[in-house]
Amino acid sequence: MNVFQFILQNHGEVLELTLEHLWMVVASTFLAVLIGIPLGILVTRHPGWNKPVLGGANIIQTIPSLALFGFLLPVPWLGARSERLAILALTLYALLPLIRNTYAGIKGVDPAVVEAGRGMGMTDRQLLFRIELPLALGVIIAGVRVATVISVGLATIAAAIGAGGLGEYIFRGLAMVNNQLILAGAIPAAALALLADVSFGWLERRLSPV
Amino acid sequence: MRNVAFRFPGGQTLLAGLNLQVRRGETLVLLGRSGSGKTTTLKLINDLVSPTEGDVIVDGRATREWDRIRLRRGIGYVIQESGLFPHFTVERNIGLVPEIEGWPADRIRKRVTELLQLVGLDPTLASRYPKELSGGQRQRVGVARGLAADPPILLMDEPFGALDAITRAELQREFLALQRRLQKTVVFVTHDLREALLLGTRIALMEGGKLVVALPTDEFTSSTDPLVLKYLDAFGATPHDQRGSA
Image (cartoon, rainbow over all chains, first blue to last red; front, side, top):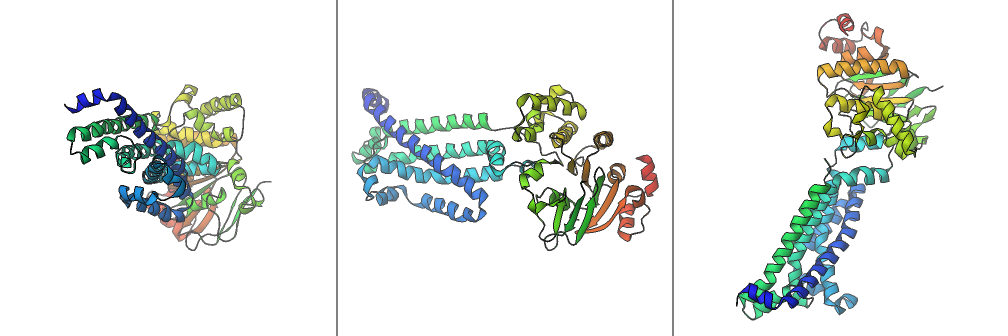
């Protein structure tokens, strides 16, 4: 039986795992956007915070994912549902590209344009929402794109702590030394990653000014 | 009576012991080479740079006492390459200060049309984006934007510096005509002596963060100050020939 026959025969389960997977990715990316973009903006306003914030996000990035899942397991409320835990871990991983790209995007806006705005009497808030964020949007979306693609891959590991998703097939396949099963998890996961990459790529081009 | 006086000086080396007055309705040119402090001096007026010592007085009040946002909205600001917002149409660029000042939309639209005509642009350009304009058109939009809320003071930082010679000459002529009509108080930064002689009613020469001299334009060329002579010399031909050709 080849992989595609397997997927067809178990399409109900494949779909369910794909949706679980998608949910983890969407929820974590959403949370990361909610936290990462404001943090990125904050560090453009307080240059002193740049190092600790980006450094912190960098350190999180260096923790092996399996270890991070393991570290978070004993945390009371989180540990109760492994899916929550997976979402939190994925959120933490997604922070770095979001903070970094938001920061870089805003810093990359032509200083002459920002100075013109300031000189014309725009408040910091007006400058941010009317000039800096719109002009940085392409770079910020690129950050969301990277975060999402990374997250699709990382979410397969969440199955190791019982959070479900397409990693289920991969881990089951590894345990049973069954390549078909591994591929049944890996192929849909790769397809999701590609889909995310292409859609955000499109959005990035659409929303990039000039 | 609006006499702008600057008594101050700046950070350690940038500017020192600068005293300068700008009179209502005049075009004061800040002339000097790169790094002479002319742009910094300009930015002191709209408080993009704050004096570390002394005071910059605008309209009888020190800039440090002004609400910075109010101060800036009352001063037009035109910079090199115009600093237009690339994601805004010409109309939104010009109408920005009126917009953040809360003007109604139809009044902004009327004002934008009026300004486009004033700077010699076809009002149908209003819906274009800056990248769709030529350098000269962009700079005209920059001037229109500076004039949008009809500020009494206009700061211009090498506004024509990036243009080709023919377009620059055209814009300089139009600036003169405009200034004759509007009688704004203009502070104009340039490193180009010809431009200074052509546009200024008074010229302030700066060097190394210090004011060398501030003289009416017609007295400038006959000054015997060694730095003025050096500057005149650098531009070749005798100053009077330049006046003539300008």
